[in-house]
Length: 279
Image (cartoon, rainbow, N blue to C red; front, top):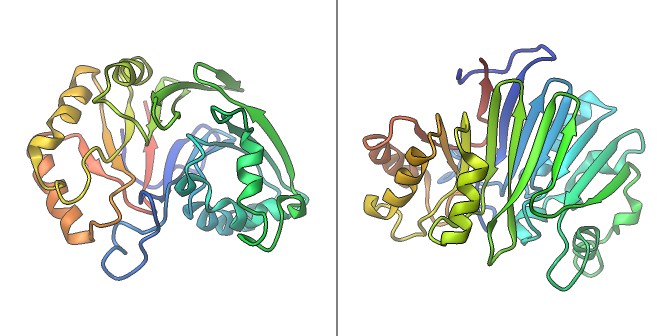
């Protein structure tokens, strides 16, 4: 695995982080090195573009895509918590008719569709512009745990990784490489752990949420179950994302350095970071 700028060929398999903060955005001088936008991840597999979650990082991605229009992309949402959807109303390419977005999300336990979840946050008085004003072609696809999708040479499989939050994880395979995105998982629960084990086994890159909340962040023993888990499933590279909003850059840097003493294949995700996978 090479951690560098992605190659400009149609066989590239790259991931870019547009938002790595959990719960709420945290702009400011104390967080600029890791970033303060809520979750959004872009994966390019050849000519296919996949976006995972639509936190405030989606606004930044959307602004970058304006120079590449027309755009066709697939947006997968782990769940409908607000930090995963709050950037969607500010996703400028969705307002431009020449673009086309496939949107995948689960129903709520009460049966509300994901389209409804996105739409309702844009109702007044929350937001001045309803989703119907978005001029791009928006195709909504119902998603449930265990679904699998094939896009030319790329394959995406979903699994439930946090039962309480009804959050999904995704395994993205392209060529001989695999990325697993499970940024709201719960390995303390036996059922969730088993599901994530199957999804992430032998992954080249596993992207997980921060398992320890502030102020217990710096207690390395609290992280041990995660380190043991990643070793047990033979993950090659582990990135921790959705950082606690109460942790500033110095805290995260200190914690990352301490954890690297126990796991040389672990690092913390940073906004703007690009990883290119290669055989």
